[in-house]
Image (cartoon, rainbow, N blue to C red):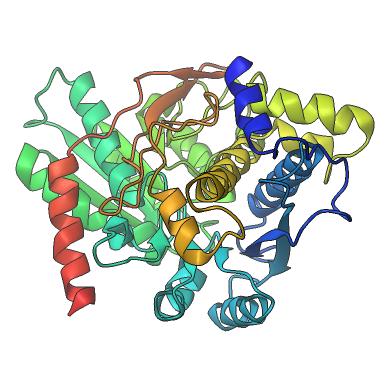
Amino acid sequence: MKRLNKLLFALAAAGAMLSGTSSMAEPFKVGVCYDLSKAYTFASPQISQAAMDLAKLINMKGGIGGEPVEVIVRDHGNEPQRGIECYSRLSREGVFVFDTLSTPVSLAILPRAMQDQRILMQSLVGRGDAVDGTVFEWVYPVGPTYWGQAANDIAYIKQVHNGDLSDVKIGFIYFDYPFGQEPIEILKTLAEKEGFELLLYPVQLPGTDQASAWSKVRRDNPDHMISWMLSGGHVVASKEMQRNRIPMDKYISVNWLNEVDIGNIGAEAATGLKRGTNVVGGQDVPLRLEMIRELYDKGEGSGPLKNTEDVFYNTGLAMYSIIFEAARKAAELEGLPITAQSYKAGLESLKDYDADGMMAPITVTAEDHGGGGKTRIEMWDGETWVPQTDWMAAYSDVVWDVVKESSSKYAQ
């Protein structure tokens, strides 16, 4: 709690403990261009609600150096053109920090942000090679990329097999579009390095028909299944696994699996299922408890209380704690007003930052815009998520070789 208070009270200027924002200076704005209506509605309401809650709490503590913070939430419907329109409109309003929570929209905005020298945050989405700050100077995929997540999943499986993957079969079931395809390159690289057999099982969107894929899984009998699907895709997969008598403990999900999915699968039926994550699950987390006490218990929350009980709310708190901590560092380093250049410096001064235990610690540098890429594997035990590993960033040399090869093509 002491570290949490330090985080929150450091955001306030000495003597500027204002309860509102009307008499404060021009706000530091973040453009939250999200899909609130189509593909990502399983996560975007919780994450955007967390962003607004955190902004409220920071403003209650006096803002950043006496300057309020503001998150401006707009819907792009996961459509690149609408995302570009959101970016352009908010840029004209003085916004220079953006988040999209969408790989297609992030890819569309990225060249513009680079040219305009505006900050594009892309935690958990977007180009995996954008962690290379020497090429993508204005793009910050802080947290694990899908490449890093997949590499960490392989490292966990290697631990299970006592360091030897030579006779192991690993299946990869994925939505057959850019999000799902993203880890394939790194998985193929690691299969060659470690000697395991990689089996690919593409699933067509929206993932409601997985029968043929899981029938093939039953015949192939891989030792583990890494899954790159979303929301209802996990629920359908669990039913197909039960139908094909495939043990649930073979399943390792990408981070996009939450308590709603567990409820839809069934708490008992989901026992043994695993996921990779960079955020602590559960409700007994200091920053979330602060939100409940200071906002929701007083009727000041930005949305339904139920949303705060979801791991994606914690994901939002983690993401926006990073964004606002970088702003605090920028003000500390170069004073007010915060500019795109000073904000960049603030991001690149974050060291072992974990939002008071909310997430895997990150260290951002001019070279590494990802912050280290740490995740851990958690298992659902029928009632809660139980960590199976410490925070780790495995195969970093392999991942960075792939990053450099890809980013060099962009640079050319």
